[in-house]
Length: 304
Image (cartoon, rainbow, N blue to C red; front, side):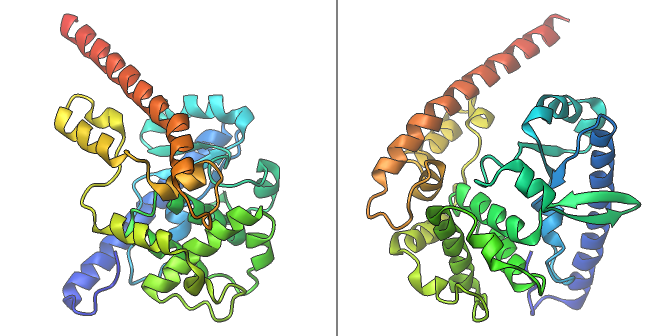
């Protein structure tokens, strides 16, 4: 939540106080999650959420509902068992298979470049600032740019970056199309929130944004319908149809990123069709399977 200069001082104080309490509670869960994974020899990497909130001003609350942890592919099955265990469920962990959806660099490179911080005597491994910014930008784009408030994550990661931040690591170690994605995401923060890029190598980012991208982002922000999992509404025909309509055609931003396309291409349709064939049917099948499982569990509970 962003600071409102017209807010009552008591409201500001209450927001700051509860934000502080929440951050402390979140830190406790992060420590417990790392200890749980390490008890089985798994070394996770923290990103998003609390790791981003560190860059926000103290007067601005940045609340996250879960703890995002990435683990190596070889540890994924064991980590998933821990996540769904009684102890793991209490920690609300969003588990990721390395950074395969968010970045093109290999796990070992990202892992060994991580920074470490101490929380309550536990060493916490977090993506280095350069890699973290790149991953957060792609994550925001995967969501189709629909969350205006989360663009502040990119704003603060850039505005409050360390003095030794290396733009070459952030931008030049990935392929040109992905570099362009990152520059565009940062450019949107400059265009809409006034992010100062004057001392960066991408100072003109806001001026070189593709017109279709800014138009689509503004359309998403004006929409009252946000993309939600189909399985959550499978038994509610009205909401299910609303979500199907939201996906038809697929969001051109997320579709372009999904298939590794170019933001500077004049056409989006071929990216949308490829993305739909890759994920659309799979999402529908997953929803059907999920609801069949839920139905069977409910039936067994009734019998018991």
